[in-house]
Amino acid sequence: MSVLSAPIPRAALFWAWVDALLLVTVIGVSADMLVRMGAVQSLVWMLCYAVALLRIAMTWPDALRVLRDNRAVALFPVVCLGSALWSQVPAASLEYGAQLVMTFAIAGWLGWRYSLTLILGAVAWVITASVLLSLLHWATGVFPWPVYTRAGGLGGLYLHKNMLGQKALLCGIALVTVLTLRRGEGRGAAGPPALALMLAAGALVLSQSMTSVLLFPVTLLACLLINRRRVPAPLFVPVVVALVLALALGPVTLAVLGADPVALILGAVGKSPSLTGRTDLWAVGLEVIADHPLLGLGYAAFPAAPDYLNARLEMTHIGALTVVAFHNFLLETAVAAGIPGLISMMLLLGTTIRRLLRLRARTGSVAAGGALVMTGCVITASLLGASLYRQHEFMLVLVVLFAVSAGEEMRCAGCPRSRGRAAR
Image (cartoon, rainbow, N blue to C red; front, side):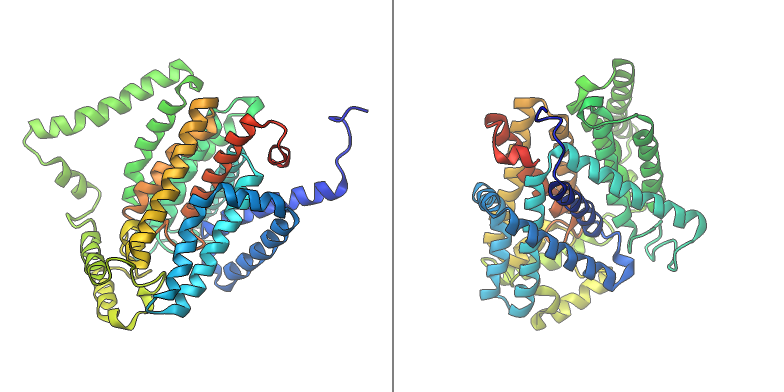
């Protein structure tokens, strides 16, 4: 009997299913699909912790090697946890810093375990499920919470319209990447992902999350351009030409007519020049940074720091009702961990982008191209949103998954018999 036709041992098959369920569950729970269920989300995270720690212990030689190879990736949670030494609220920094370390550990192990193609496929279909459920709630009101959020727009499974908008946007990128795969690379029939893409676009429009709505055509264009060799010419050429003409001629036409393009766009999407209060929140954040410019207040300390009660009340008055955040991940990082936090965050993002670029250049990986577009989208959205820097954060999980998985694929390309290749 050949090696390829040998039956898979039952134990290996069992753990393969466990790992797959862990990947799907982590994507779903970090994407806040269970946020409306209260304590259920916390219980699911505890289950993910337990399973991930067990699997890390079972594969500890590889886990240690992955940690060694990803020191630049792992520096950010170490800095945030260490900020408890100077934090104004040490207990909060320890608690949330430990959760951040676990978030990186789980995402890092899954990044070692799975390829970029499988990760993007899992993201596409798990988030599509949340889109379907959100649209079902919009059509029938099936869930026991309001269809629309207080800020207006469809919330669906989520607490805020921007949460649904961001997930639909990232889902769209993953689905376009799946559509550009060949049959032998993990794509089945084109119909289901094409239909899912239309549903994601519909949910995005209903959410009225204008940052995500504006980013959607730009990211689709980027996906088409970066994987242009996989897109049929009859489809590629007219779509790209139409998008480029719209993006190039629109501002020029407005300028010729004597209109202010920025003011018109903001007015059309219901935004004020302060970006719905974001610039006012940024001003508060800069004041906090000026008080503690080197090391920050400590990770997750600002929401509980007694010296900044008035600042939090001011932010609530501005509009930060759902979460006390500055809506800019660079400000959040600087407030939490100062210069060390900013350096470690830049190392994380820089390492992710560099690895994806190298993998794309060396292998022509379609998944690496899609992950690059998604990483750029994550960074852009996080400059205007309360994401990327927090523990249990979906966008942070994605960045770590991409960084570690791309590193493993580069390693496997030069070492085809490595154990990591076999496990993936």
